[in-house]
Length: 149
Image 1: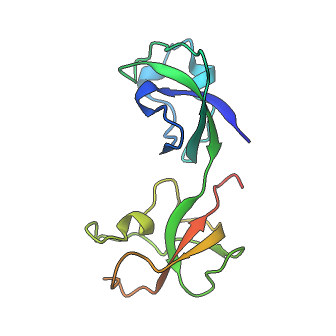
Image 2: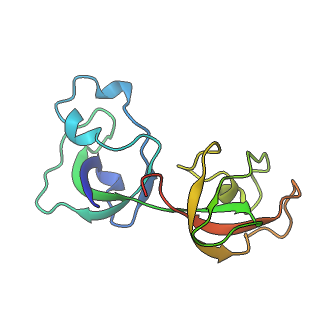
């Protein structure tokens, strides 16, 4: 279900994904707080639409202001343990990985996904992009449902 919120005009592109980080100290006293701070902190979202004829509003956080967009919680690609990794099952991340140069690092430590909770697997995508896991983990690349699903 879509939700209307305000985001920086530089970020207001249909299809753009982001993780809502919550309130900034610069938000204090802003007249648009209720329209801007209405998402779940730590949740991953995708911009699904731009509000037509919406004006750009001044913002202390975004240098070119903010504008109204429609967003929806979205799934995230992630590497999980291969054992039991099938659509409809639940999985959690294996844990932090220090190998930031690995082609799979963004899937082992994905934005908007917590290490301490289970997620429903929406789809199995296949083999991870790495040839060999430096931590010896047997991983499968999956699409994890958003926290709100």
